[in-house]
Length: 255
Image (cartoon, rainbow, N blue to C red):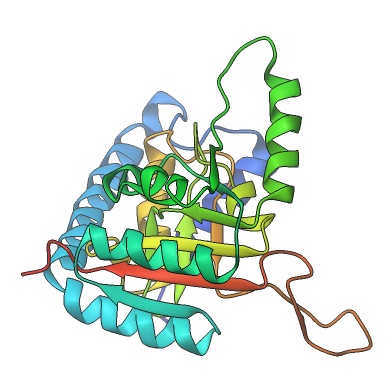
């Protein structure tokens, strides 16, 4: 029987071992330092190949992502330019008669001039950014309330997965999972080059982050609208998250 494991299994097993032993993986005794170093080098090389493939096969991966996301009940639109992306989001906001929007600080939302486009229609746009200051707890509650009252939450993504039609968001400063969870409608803008072939590729990249002490506490993987079968065994959308998810696939930069 083969002893080989895939990156996802390796990642999860490392986390399990760390929880069991209290060790910090990658910082073991000096006699073990060579092995983690070799592993980190190998993972980095494999991660680079995955990212290169994401750029090289951008057109094909966008097409696969669209197919998978539509099967997961997402509304998917492919656009060629940032202007077309902002125009589509403006149309969605108008159709919903949206008055309040919360958004993340992903760079792509600045590049499509999102705030100006929506503000021109009288839509209030709030950036979900939390600074590290003495009033952090109070501001966090205020942002949560604003997200829960918003008509739409808009984000970029860190990655998207062609295999499952999923968006992946790694929270950080200015990137809160509340944007994608609390409003009834979530719009995610995905750029060519951000789409990975499979979940295995995602877990490889996250393992690289882990080995570089950049993993963070969690990540959000969003695969279509929220679904629940808790109520009389009937599938209901939007109970534990948005009932409507739009993916805006931006082709800008494709050859």
